[in-house]
Length: 168
Length: 79
Image 1 (cartoon, helix red, strand yellow):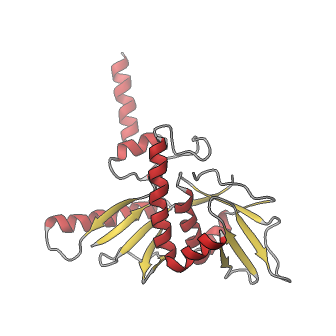
Image 2: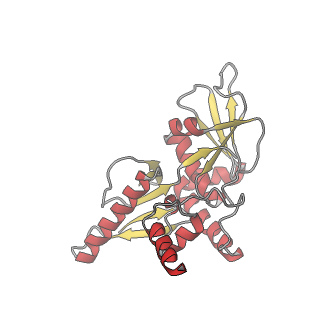
Image 3: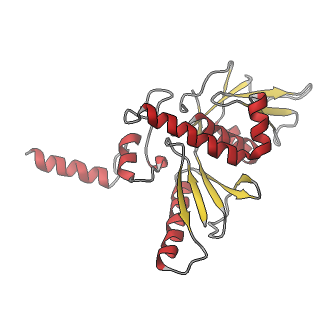
């Protein structure tokens, strides 16, 4: 009785007819995890899944630093480590600057006379799947510099700063 | 040798291919790299390409002679 039901359930999962939770799907992927295939909203904030060990977190953060450094280049990486943030001037809204900090909301700075389209000074933007903070910082920098329209489309204005929920 | 940096919770993982070798294995590695980029884009990811010493967002078709691509996570607003 249970065996046919179990078989049917496995087939449904294989056909991807039902949304698959991230950690379970990632295990099915094999050596290369493809997180865009799965949903991750059920995970507690700033975590990567129950199957992640302390060592996994540590290794992920180390790898993220390598990539962030290589994505930003030496000069920007030096600025980030010295100042603790990177500023990206808006090309869409003259006088506006996006201040990016690792693991935090984007701060919108307005030059005198410049008008911000948002009612609050912070923009909350998360990756749709869990990533180390530094890895996502590099992504956010690319969106701010090269894909501002996308950033503007999804940004959720907030009155205060806070750590992001989908990074760790 | 080209490579894709696949950002995920592991920090990232690498997919490599060779455009300079005429073997079946090399050809398959190019096709696989192209498939991964296409799938990620179809699912809402952005892609960056290394140009000179830095990455820039890129929406051009896969170039097997590119040095490095990176799959950029889709973004969403909210805490």
